[in-house]
Image (cartoon, rainbow, N blue to C red; front, side):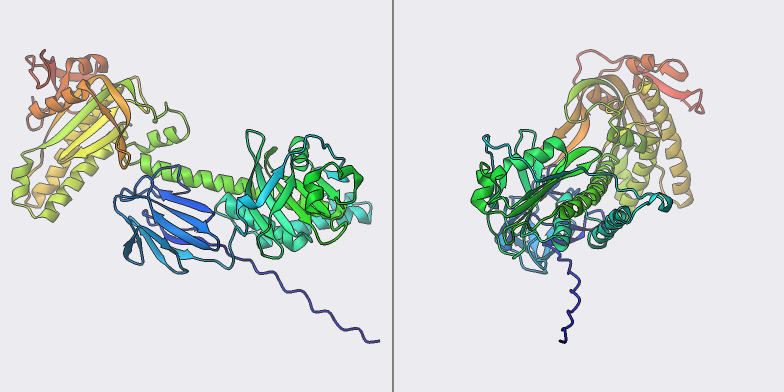
Length: 548
């Protein structure tokens, strides 16, 4: 009898789920998978955070509705655009171009929905009467391989080969996922390729003892309700071991587990997904088509998948941390030096979230006669001049680890104090001011060689208590300092003549020795009843003395 040849099974196609691809405001390219609900905006709590001043704190949301995705604008200031048209709500089609501020994305419907069943299609049933006996339990053993000389039997060789095969299959199919949700989706895809499961669910344990569904897959591709036994899930979490239940319908040991029996599950497995010893999720597979569909060998395969998944989950967590730190560093670097920004990210500073009273040394540097200077220049020349001035001033501030608070017209405001304070902050502010004057001199040498008028600058510094923290509206806020100390520094700057550095007596006293200062008559500043003890600072032991 001639036996027909059986064709080799086709290689499984890796399905790509619904996603956004495109360019962020900072010019970086990225791909972001879409879940049941994806929020977009500037606030860190959003699913997809966009560091862009043109984007609102809570700008838009993309929600799954069956197989479709609906984009809704959340009353953003600058609007949400699809294919160049401003929209409030729109059902997305494959290839639609979405614009939010300077960020531009393309919507891809995907080969199949990445989440075939919504979380509501999974029910975890608690049954306190049931503490079932499990057919098999298995530890997640180490995935290392012994030297060839230590292999004494063929069975050990087979086990090591199986570990290698699973690792190869896992990494062949699982790409470097950008999010945990995308990785969960890929993990279930590998499990379905290697095991005869009908349904697969990944759940994450919550602090209140419940389980939250992350991803659901069905072999037939159609959504159906999946009922899981709370007893099975808890056994996995409490023991940290993979479990196998066989023929749940007729096995008397599961007769009290109504959630399993009512569902008619013939075989089920559950395994923990562990990162550095901590259980991050539970992977559950079931079969309703065959009695004893899963064996202990299948449990070993699933345990091998879980071991590889744990490594991948750790990599995703590290990638997300790196991306979050990069976003935070870019945001902080707008007003903090690199050293201070790094310290904030590492948690070496006091929190930024809460506003508080703190001692600061506040500096204002303002261009004198700016209107006259700019009236004979083209707008482009004025912008170029300001950019050169601001760049030079910012470099000095950052060199002395101050905070670049803001640019106000033709004025620079800098603060020494939170989030990273130094015992010598007043001295740092004074030294920075002197070096700012030197930087302006260097700029003016260049301007004179180009036949341009020189820039003239006056500086004022004050030290004292101020309210420091994030302030502003819901749409826009910034880290700054406010209060009488800040106002007095601004008033002194206004009184300073071209090339003059004025500082209050408090600043001079707290800065200590090393500065050359001439006491001036008490000055009356707007907003204060009492006069301000004022000094003209002309140099320091580290800086050439200026003409008084």
